[in-house]
Structures are given as structure tokens and as C-alpha cells.
Length: 329
Ligand SMILES: [Zn+2]
Image 1 (cartoon, rainbow, N blue to C red):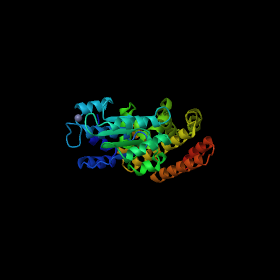
Image 2 (image 1 turned 120 degrees about the vertical axis):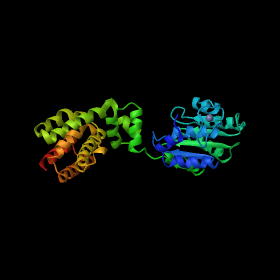
Image 3 (image 1 turned 45 degrees about the vertical axis):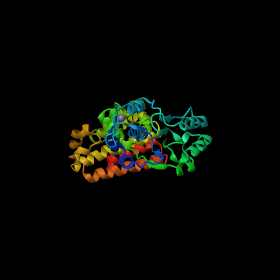
Image 4 (image 1 turned 30 degrees about the vertical axis):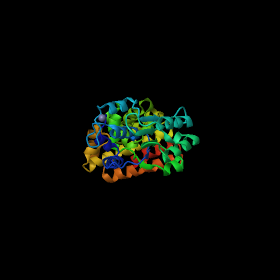
């Protein structure tokens, strides 16, 4: 179980706001937790639920041990209701069931909490049903509406709730999370520089793509500077076959950019921030024969290649132009 201070690391603005409201006992009756997948909406909703009901609360921190905390963890607390989409949508009968439950006084206390995941998937009739409920709850209730697309919620639902924006995770928090999920440190460092969105990550890393692409970019860039005769062959045999779709092609160019930035970091003495830390020896060797000016020009060439890619130029052509232009400077 994460503590509030751990969660604060994930959401440094939302969490202090919630804690302050908890401390002052000034929680609103409805919140929208809006933010992309993986930003901690569900975890923070659960933690808030525990803090709300915990009998042994220490400040704002729930104990995690009492009957209430344990029931919330197990998903069977009588005063806490979770709604998730039934198939593709959240239907009216789900909201009506909730309302029926809530017309009884709280079993354990007079308070109730409901958490609606993917609240944007409510049908119009479900949302209208909820609306009445948001306006006139029978007993003190706290509604937590979780969504990745808050613009898809009814304006009337939005106007009756307080919105909290969950920001994308910082690179270091994201990289730590990827490692907790089993990814190696080297891969997670690289991936967190390319994206901090879990869905994008899953898509990009299908079939262990990051590990493959990482080793090919190291080979390609090493050859570009040290064994230039081989580089077009590696492009043909190894690089192009793994950069098939636009997303991979773009991520591939990002990796080249990051590799070059590392080289620049070595030149400027910032070796503790490398994205390819295992390449430090190679970078130091290369840094002896390449000037900062040259690296800056090579970085500009990669940015130009990204522009060409976005203008739908043929990828093989984009890459050949890039490698030749770096070799020519
Ligand atoms: Zn407790």
C-alpha cells in the first residue's frame, strides 16, 4: 500500500490539495480526477477513501490495518461503491442501483463514497441520472469520477464537480514505475525520455521492441563515427526492419537524438545524466575527435529528419539523408 507521501511523488500538485481539504474537513461533494492512464487516479481515489473511513487515521494517513481499510482494499466496504463500465459503457441501471443503495443510511457510518471509473463512458441517460444524485444526495456522499477524457463528460456533470487535473508523470517517476513493472533500468531510462504515457509505452514496446531498438541504435551510431563504411548496410539490414510503423520510426529518430545529446553531455561534463549510461566509455573515446559544434550540427540534422518524416517523406530516404549529412560534417 502506497502512503500519501509516496503518492505525492506521483502527483505533486493534486495530493497536497486533497490532503489540505482532508485536514480541514472541507472535502467537496464531487471530484473529477482527470488525467491520462497511469497517472495514479485510481490509487489516489482508494487512498482518499481509506483516509475518509479509517478509524485509526494518523493525521491524514490511513492505518491500512483496521476493518475499514482492509474492507476497502478487498473491495467489500458497505459504504464504498465502485462503478466500472459494463461492457462498452456505464449504463443507467448501474447508476440507479447506486442511488437505491444510497437511499439507505450508511451501514457503517452515515457517509458514503462512490468511485466511477472511466466516467466518460456513462451513457447520456446514466449521466442524467447521476446528475440528480450529484445535486441532492440523500446522505453525505463523496463522488469521485475518474476519466481520461474529461471533455467527454456532460457539461452539467462537470459544473457540479470540482476538477483535479492529474499531470503526466515526471520522467524519473515514470522510469521507476517501469522498473517496478519489470523493465530493466537501461530500457526504462530510454523509454521515459521518449514518452511518459503508459498506453504509448505498451504500444511501443510490443515484442520487446525497446530492447532491440536500443541495441541497434548503439550499433548504428557507433558505426557512423567509427566504421562509416558499414553504416548503410546496418541501416538496411537492422534499422529499417525494426522501424516499420510511423511511431517506431519517430521513436527511432528520438533515440538517435538522445544518443547525440549524451555525447554532448560528455563534452560538457554532465555524464551523470546519460540516457545510455552503459555507453560512457564509447562516448568518451568519440568525444576526443568530435567538437561540440559538430554535435550541435548533427542534432540539427536529426531534427530536420523528424520534420521530413512528419512531412511523409519516405523513411529510408530520410535515414540515408540523415546519415550522409552527419558523415559530411
Ligand atoms: Zn484504517
